[in-house]
Image (cartoon, rainbow, N blue to C red; front, side, top):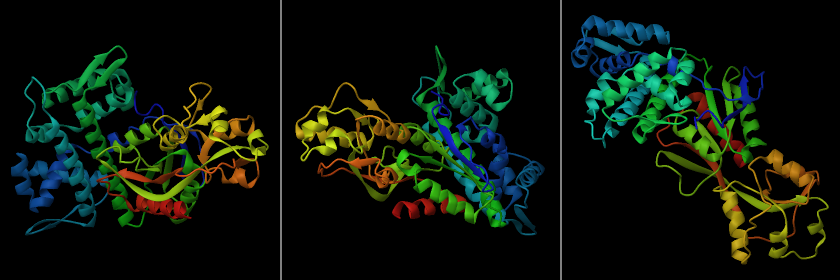
Length: 431
């Protein structure tokens, strides 16, 4: 399934004025904004050597071509990147900021080149791949990964299907390994194709963040930060964090995306969101992400006020096992605790009549209008508990706690805006 399907943009706040809710759409902005990779390479070489001539020699280009490439980048980023001195080329503050991001972007592409192999065809060498892969080829790969076919990728990029097909074919020939497989529903990426698409997305994201870094250095915070939010954080933590960040940076744009943990994790690893807040998994689900525990959340068995079980002087696990339940999704920490609750008591988990959902809106409505029970965060339902609409059942349970925190990419380098958002999430999670 294309990644964008299944994600939902729940808030898009800009200039502190607008809140909208609509399905998330594929955003080709990052890919369209990515400069020519060859220009980025010669920019990096010029920084390394402080010399246009040395950069031209290493890139096997003419000196005027390197000079023109740097001039094109200065036009694209709207700033001077180098001070031209008699003894060489020295990066300005903007050049240094761009240089950090460009190095990271090129490293992502280099790592992708290192993964090539495992095919009967001769894979490209890392150096060959890094030197000749182009922006248009990586754009095509990401678009195909996003949409699942050439026609969708063409609409996504606003170019013709033959152009997408040509770029994808050239990329596969350069890589020397299969990147695509045809299936009845369209195209799917091979393991190497998926890894390469992820590296491309992360490279694109670094260049987008470079524009934010440069603007911030000039006192302008107009960037964008994207948060993946699981249900617990949506009631209080995230809205309060948004308010705090927008008070400091009123011209920032913030998107909050909800969905299943698996989809949000994939979006995080692809650079489509900057962080993920909610229940943590232990151990961390992938080697390229890291988790930060913010607090431990207490779960309880909740029911509507006036539920028949509230009238019992003593509850047994058998009483709970016979009830109708609203349960979390399979694989979530809360679902594991639910299964353990019954398993430890010797009762088999109910096999029929369960309603499985991660939506607090659905859980709240079903609790208020039925005799179903839910194993739910006391913190998440605190307003309903305070209003005496929902109440915990008088059943003492031990060990029903889960870690709540923030998940980020292990190599993530936040902008000033995303750093402020992370700090705000930490603050309100603790409060």
